[in-house]
Image (cartoon, rainbow, N blue to C red; front, top):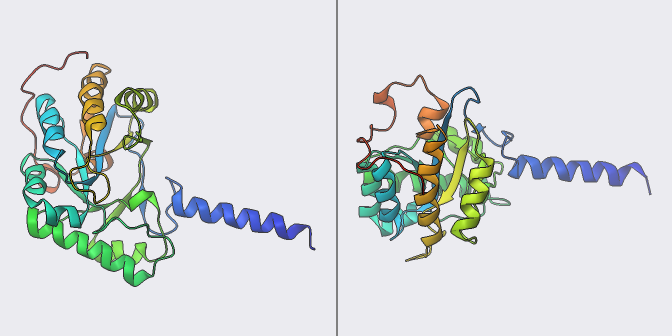
Length: 252
């Protein structure tokens, strides 16, 4: 056996793994994972919604006048159109998270294109919003995403910090995010659990209830993904402005 062969195979596997899952990888389509380190701004994002619990998160965000970006699944939008509209009406940004939240690796370009297009269509029909950002389910990219993104006018978004809020306690989520956040961070949490009806997102809601005032006290400004990545974009090209906080931020 050629002694070099295993090394080459290992290197190739590592390269593919990075292209598929690396947060800074753009091999399978243009992708962003953080904003400028020179601005004390961060973006709070939520995947997998909308769900029956989305309204609870909206209440917390409204309390502090904080905008967020919600990466919604088309199937959940079709199931709960009023919840999706509530997100848009509150002035938050909506991104595309495919239609049915499939794992896209080993899928055909045709399947990938259909999932992204169907998600885009469902969001547009029910909310009137035309997403410009796309987040792949599980953060897994694959050949075919680039073409699909360009066809729908989308740019991929990964994350800087992920909270693992679907299987951790609120305490663990708060500690993980608070310890890893920095200027330009994109925080990934979840207001749904894939396509599950009536998911328990209590840990997420409680974590956000505690994280938002804590991070505000540390001097961070919350922005939508558009504002974070494109700070010179005019207000007419990004999400609507949120009203001022209904209560003054305070420490938890």
